[in-house]
Image 1 (cartoon, rainbow, N blue to C red):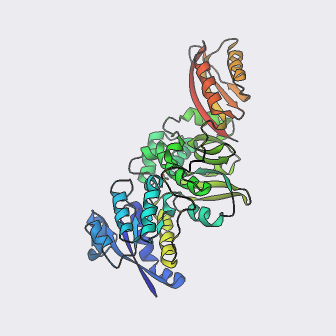
Image 2: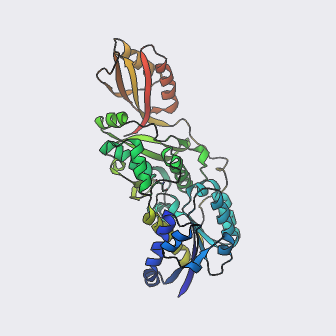
Image 3: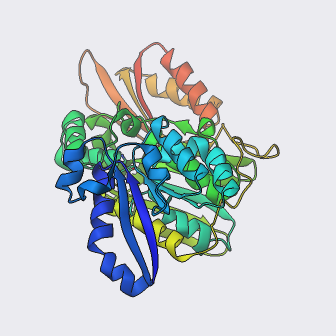
Length: 427
Ligand code: HSE
């Protein structure tokens, strides 16, 4: 039986989960895959942690050279994160001809061109199923299952931490800070949660997924990004009243004007399939020209779900003699003729605080009219203080630039105390 040796760089949450799956399922893979996958080496500075997970002392390496020079190691799993040491270690593994399996979305997003070049040079594999949407097999779906299609749109909840926070805030009235602490304790959040709550993590993943879906590099810099750190209980409650659930959505579209990629908090109609994706669960809703709509759902974070994706890559690499790479020319930037859309279209939710006096509504709607923005719904709430009232508006689909210009004009109107919130809406 073919024997394949694995090294794991980093035994944190995901590294620990991967070690557990590989050791507990070894016999199962021998039977079902006809391959003996053995953990030959781990690189973990905290030796106690490695020993407590059951790693035999002699398998704990003390530096990367020991791992990449080990002839028994065929596949190196990188679960360190970040683009410092992780990039250096992955490159040295690839340069030594080892196949690399990584869960590192920032690394793949920013350096896939460099890593893929190194892999191809050495005829090594480079696999990253675990970099996007944890245990949900989205990369393999894009590379295999949906290759027949032109993917026209992709809409996903692809960050578990923010989905957990928004769910707790919405369903239990938990504060943003408490919900974030809980997500960290459950092992969903990145080491620095700014990456989660400010939408960086989702944007790295969207860059990878849209590059695969649209067959060109979609650089991180092309993604419009807004996080959830300024989301308020008030807006969640008003949204609910109007029949919407607030989610951090990652959206990628192939339009006649070019590729549109964005990550931002978005109101989703409560009947939409993405509205019921709660807690740390993730989902991606794809549309292809032949297949129409496909939705994948599952755990996007955590030790075993992400470990599941890593081990699926290990098994793929261990059982295939040909490596697979991107379906596009993997450069640092998109092809020259690829266009990106900045002035995208969406419906909008706005919350204003205005003086409760005659004529306010007509002045505001006149500004919308001048910007060709049509209003679907408008609610005025009871006065809060000093004769000021919250005013909530939902618009029809319009252009981002039109909304920004209208908001600037509305902000300057006498009687408008503030434009408190501008959020996008998917119906
Ligand atoms: N911090 C990430 C999340 C983990 O919350 O989804 C998986 O990338």
